[in-house]
Image (spheres, rainbow, N blue to C red):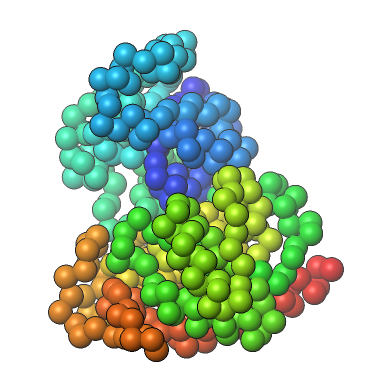
Length: 356
């Protein structure tokens, strides 16, 4: 049975589909799964043993230039690649107008979430079959239900893994146990933990004999990473490809991160650590798999699910007089984070000692 999965972006959303793929191939070994994904994230589906072919598309890069995209040779090549394959099922696992339109370029009956379940209800109009998926579940659970309904199998009683076990086993042969990765970046300004808090956490890690190691994704994040590392005598990672990031994550003692794609990649890598959540709801989009503990900010307005803070709470200030934003994450203080992290570091150290 030939199946095309459409889940194009973003990084965290792509990672969230992996457990459902693990479950699907276990329940239906005859499946031949292809995955249509943004080119920037094409490495991730290829890591999973159940994906036979990855079809990259650079839809994001063409944003704002759709007419030029449709006239380009790159788009023609993409169309030709889809034209050569007939699918028994095309599953839009994203539920957006964009993803539904991309799914419609493939040959085969299309299915996806119904208009109540889809992130953009109009997307459901393009499907031949529409499936009801409860909207109050975690993103991974919603995807599990969507694939099970579309492909006709029962959900497993125990949650599946991300399907990266064999790859991760090879990456962990030589574990440098001193690094703790700090994942500070996010596209939402109010998802970011204050720099002063990161710096204080880094100093505590240094005092414990560990190396606070700061990741970044763009130039602005690199500048922030440098500020944090300078304040706590830490390290700044170079720019890394996704495969290199997975290797770095797999070898870390632990991670601490805000709600971002890198945090979800860390969860897929099985690294212990903490996720710091303010405006977003960890019950729906938190890390999944049990290795990373999600800490929610202590304000009644959390989660607001807004990209910009509208809180009327009084501001907090750092030791240098700098305003700490956003108010919710500013109140998730470094001492609370350290108290939750320290026992994880000790357990990981014992595990590494037992494995040496």
